[in-house]
Structure formats: C-alpha cells, structure tokens
Length: 378
Image (cartoon, rainbow, N blue to C red; front, top):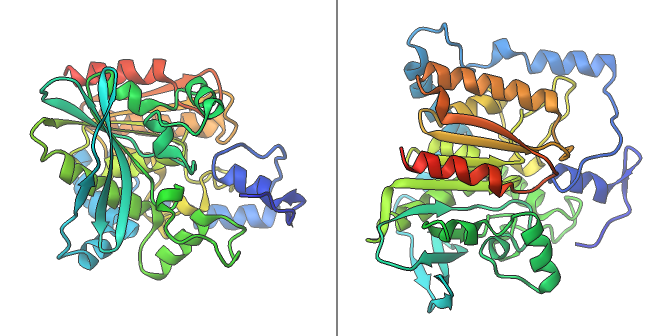
C-alpha cells in the first residue's frame, strides 16, 4: 500500500495508520484538552460497565462468566452470523501435500459462511497422532498466513520473519502440533474482505471491511472469531487430532483474535496473545488497537481484561515487548493485575501468566513455548 501524504493532527495518514494497526507507535504524545478528558472519563466510567468482574458480586466467578460470555458474543455479532449461516455446511478443499523434511505442508481453503472462502496452510507432523491442534491467526500482515507457515516471498522476507520468530506454524508443527495457519479475514490479501477501493478509509482495507461489518450488525473481530471456530470444527473431526488440546496463538491483530476467541470458544484450552494485551483505552483516552478491532458498546460491557478473564479456567499467556511502544507499561500491568484477580477467583491462579519480551512488536518463542508445553502436560 503506497504511503499517503494526507495529514491528520500534523502527522501523515500513513503514520497514523501504521500506529493504529500496531506496526509502530506514534513518536508524538499529544494529550486531550481538560474538557475532552472529562467527557471521556464520564463515558468510560467503570461503574457503567455491566460485566466488569467484581469478586464481591453475588454468584462469584461462575455467575459472572455465565452472564458475561453470551453478551460478549452478541456484541461481537456472532449471534447474527449464526442466524445468517444457520444452514451452511463449511466445505474444505485441500491440495496435495508437500514434503518439508520433518512435516508436510498442504494448502487448503474453508468456506466458513456462504461465499466466504478462507485460505490456510495445514502443517502435519510425521506419525499417526493423535496430535494436539494449533490454530494461528495473524495480524496486519498481508502475507501473514504464509509467513506463519514458513512460505516466503524471497530471502529478505525469510530473514526478517525468522529474526522476529514469526514462523510460529513451523515452530508448532516441530513441537508435535497439527497446525493450521489461516489467513485472517480483512487483514490478508488472500482474505481481504471488503478492500478500500473507493479510498474512503485512508487506503486501509481493514477499516473499510470493519465499516461494512457494522452496517450488517457484525464486527470484524466477530467475523475472525467465527472463522477460527469453523476451522476448529473441521480440524477436531480429523482422526489424527487430539480434540482435548487446542492451542490458539497470535501476534498483534492475531493476538486480538486470540483473546476474543478464547473468551468465546471454550474448546481452546491454551491461548497465547502476543503484543496485543493491554486495555481498550488508556486513562488519558488513547485507543490502542486498530479501528478494525473496535466492538461497538463494549465499554458498557467491560474491558479487555474482562475479555481475557473469560478464558479462565483455561490457560492464557499474554506477552508484550518492552520496546513495542504501542501500549504503555502502566496499562499493560494494570490489565494483567485484573486478569490475575479473575483467575484467582476461578481457583487457578497459575493458569494465567504475563511475560515481557526484551524487544519490540514481535513473537517471543522462548517465552511462549515453555508455557504452552507445560500446560499441554497438565
């Protein structure tokens, strides 16, 4: 996507878009006026969040989770999607597998709803199984599912990807997972959704697709969660898959998909969200995630730490880079503490962990896989 020279608050639109999509942070740190800050504090007041976890509330953790999850699904648009696709049977097409030393690589497509075909890579370990399942959504990367599966455009792409641990599909299959690296709807070229062909959204395809979702009573995140669930439906029916052990892992926008999917999809036993965990909005009114990650009305429901808390008592690891710059340390730590509180109430405090990587906006294999493999043995 060529950079645009339009400016917004003194910054180029390309810079704003890159920051919002998690590619890099804004170098400037403007502040809202006192009047705006007061307004935002009012509309984001925690007392108005119906499903923010309160350990003292009647019914405790179990009652909170039972009430909060269906409402989150409704906000995401999943109930509307279920109505729309009620009679649809997802079809899967697979090409011939390719040998890749200690595993096979196979291209596939799944029709997750009528007229929506999501490409993916299937990486299968040698042997008969049963294998645990890994589903690995990517973020704002037009080649994300290829990168994840170790399919590179050229040597430069390969070098950059390996330096940032982005070949997580290869990492997973070599650890014994039957691995699916899907294109994330609205983020990958191969699953672009509704591109910004009329240039009404700053050249950002993800924002264009998000707007069309809203008009149909959906959200972009909800569609992505829906796709991951349909992939899980298909994969756990494979005879070589151990349906009891499903891992989802993603970086940046893929981490956002992972957090919401783990909240809604109870078949995910282990979830790892990389460089995406924080809060929805800071105390100073900064919205951290890309526009396409917005859920209308969610701040009347709760916060991102409440979304993550719905994964309990299952396993959740959140990883952030010290030098990412997209989220502040204060907000990340504040959110982690609230998730710990929920896991404590669920009686499984050791099933949640937050870790800091020493670099920027990337995967941290040395932090993620020990947590995953340990959880897999429990």
